[in-house]
Image (cartoon, rainbow, N blue to C red; front, side, top):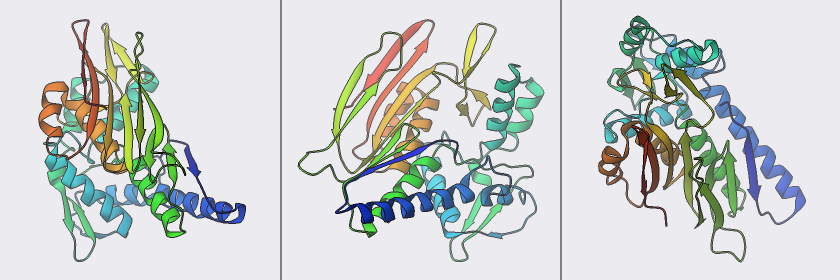
Length: 295
């Protein structure tokens, strides 16, 4: 999934710890084979290759589940989280490699291939049908969190409960370390005037979305690697979003979705998700605005 995974957990002895680590990493690697759009032969890419064919494609339990979760989140976020955004993501990856801004024609072309409403799920048969030609699924906005959640379940199945999983900077936390109230997590603004919040957390997911290192400059404007599914264009005003949510998958997806909509709409969407905390920074006309509910 394009990110390193790191496990921290407390086990009764070395042999259990070694076995648990092997099984947890094994689960993550299996999910990488299923979900990674970077791998030509991954299951999700094989499914995308059948888009527009009219066929119902039988898929694994894991691929069906993550797409079912994604579809629900797409509806809850008014389409600002969308696992069909792959064509636009591919376009912007190429633009950043070449340092060339996409043409209007290219952007309009990929927009025709995006839309979560064209992803159809048949729950009884665990089958998927992609309704438009040349669709490309991309669960990069939720995959790391989902894989971390699954690894936590593997460890819990072995009797291990004090767990922290770091998936490229996004965290999934289970019970706290022995004798502690929670895991101490530092969250930063990622700006030149960096500010830090220290949180004590357990049994949540924490995800941060930002364009600190990955962006394209064009005519004096920065365009993020994070793409708005509705426009097909990289975000222009987003700086950084951190979300604390019920689990890794939800935190991962909402960090992306709230980045796309900005502060005002993010407040409306966040009311749909009980107990989430958000720190969102955006900049317009040289002015930075912050919305912070972390505590």
